[in-house]
Length: 103
Image 1 (cartoon, rainbow, N blue to C red):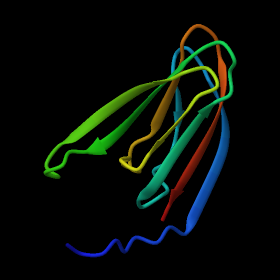
Image 2: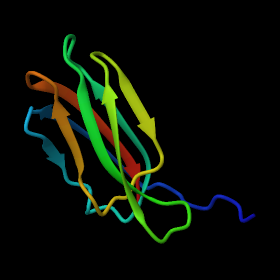
Image 3: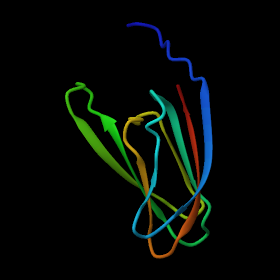
């Protein structure tokens, strides 16, 4: 196998209010993403994160969804930068922090 050669040179940190109808976080200005971190700063409600990743065989895409508990966070490396991240609050708007590391 070839050694890991991707060298991240951009770091983005945004604070987002996730609404119950879904709030997009545009990431298409990046060529690729090395890591995505989402922190739910709300103390009561969960936030659903939806993002797209490539299938293992590279021929199809897959939408991923994960609930982030109140006060919780997720970290993933499986994220396609060309598609927006969507954050959807459960019952009321939630403040979230999004960290994106990429090129």
